[in-house]
Amino acid sequence: MTLSVSDIFRKLNEKNKCALVPFITAGDPNLKITEKILKILDKEGASIIELGLPYSDSLADGPIIQEAAARALSRGIKFDNVLHMVQNVAQDISSPIVIFTYYNLILTKGTENFVQVINKSGAKGLIVPDLPLEESEELLSLCSKNGIELILLISPTSSLERIELIAKKAQGCLYIVASTGVTGIRSDLNLEIKNLIKTVKRITDKPIIIGFGISNPSQVIQVKSWGVDGIVLGSAFVNKIANFNAETTLVELTSFCKEIKQAIDFVQ
Image: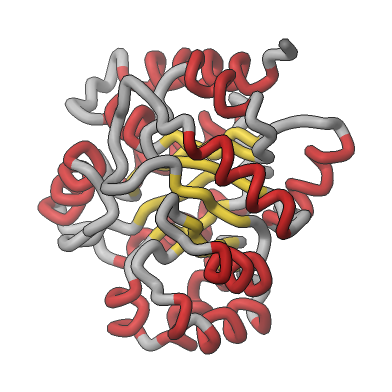
């Protein structure tokens, strides 16, 4: 049985390990390939996997992930198709799947129905980057009742008071956004995030993951040294899948995942 997000962090903490959290877009290039990729990421050491639902107005995402979503939508990928695929693969992998989506899609499907169906699919967590904290109570309650952990985000512009509120409400872990703006590959990381991590760790003992802009082994090693519990790489993985080639893409993706996993496990 797949563990919850919280259980994964408890196990990693016992071993003083940091979580690898790759992100991919469901349905790019198609759902059969997405299923293969989920199995590859699980086999190569992903602790948790973020699975983005393709959405036409993904405001938090940069060009790489937006283009992946557009490709999936252009091929007719639907919400129900994605959940059917998740249901097929979740029982075969140990990495819990966290659904990444936008609030409007949840509202369109009906909040209670949405949470119930992603739980039925075998997903274990949910990230909604545009969910206002002030409107999160219903979703938090429904997730709690349905075995889904709602992961809340902290940005570099969050006030101390707001960080305290987010930390109190968050389920599973806290997600620190490493830079303002959208997701993407960046050559340099915002070093002020190191201080933000220290602030959050003073407020709560909940696990902390960090993402947005982290894309290579040296950045992974740098961010891990700041004391986080997990590192998210999105655009870097999605970019490996773009321009899919049946002969080379999965081999290259496997190699990249191995490389990032080695960086995560690197002991300084």
